[in-house]
Image 1 (spheres, rainbow, N blue to C red):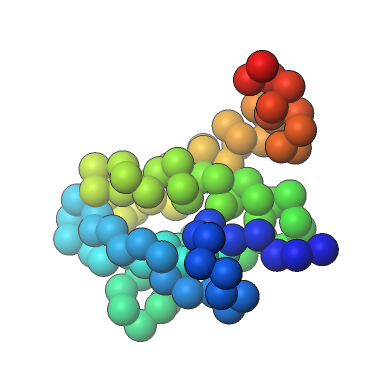
Image 2: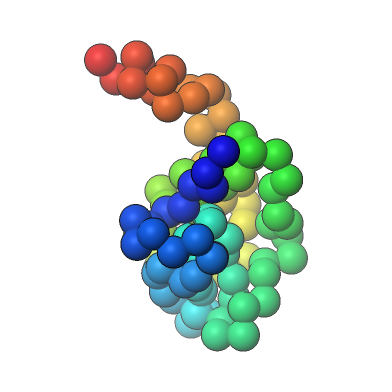
Length: 105
């Protein structure tokens, strides 16, 4: 099964696709696989962890994309809880892309 990424450039390796800054001035990098790192050195946020299951990875990508534009409104301490809440929202909304399409139609 092919890996899914946020961007459509075709590059198979994870790479930075967006950079955002929090309300308290911390730089965040959003990666193509849904990872979120702090600063330019690529330190992962310790409170988020890395999802291992495929459906959890999909939830993480959706949550990070949904919050990407709103990260400027949050302090760094609020980012991880907000992503966790967004993952929980996506967990209960739909189980797969086919299910989502059925709900939208």
